[in-house]
Image 1 (tube, rainbow, N blue to C red):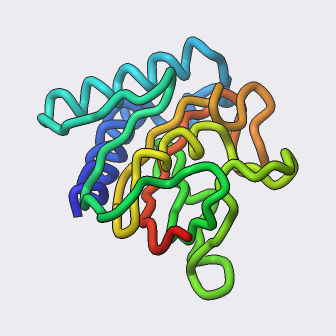
Image 2: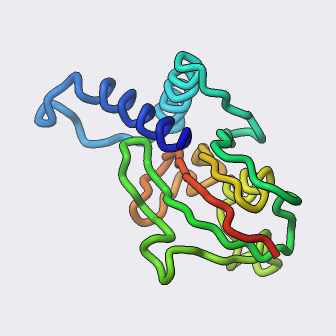
Image 3: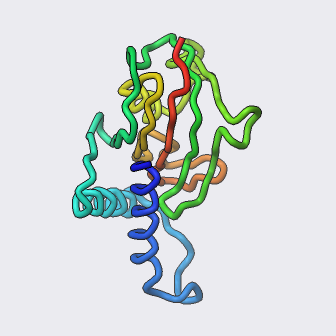
Length: 169
C-alpha cells in the first residue's frame, strides 16, 4: 500500500521537525496561513525527496494514486461508496468511515443541496478516481475547513485522506 507508506513517511517528517523541542518549551499552537504554507511545502519536498509521484490537481489538492481502478471516474450526481480515513499531518485521525456503520460511506457527489456537500478538496480529488481506486488526497485548508476549522480540525490545517472507491452508481 503505497498510500499507507506515504502517509507514514509524512508522519515521520512532521515528527522529526516537531520533536526538536521539549513539549514544556512549546508555546500554545498558533495557526496561520504562513504556517500552513510551510507545512505544505515540507510535505511536497518530502515526497519529492522520496521520489513519490504527486499529481497536482487544483490549487491546494494533491493526489497520490496507490491502486488505479477501472471504469469511469466519479462525476456530479453519482452515488459514490467509499472507505476513507482523514488525518491531520501529525497522524491524528479526525474522521473515518470505519467509525460509522459498516465501514463505508455513500454520498451523492456534488449534491445539489449545499448542506449535503463534502469539502471542495474532497470533491476535486475524488473526481480523478474510479471504482477500485485507492489513493491519498492531500488538501490545503482553503479547500477544507479554512480559517474556522471544524471540530477536531484546527484552523488553517491541511488534511490527508486515504480513500478507496468501493462503488460508483
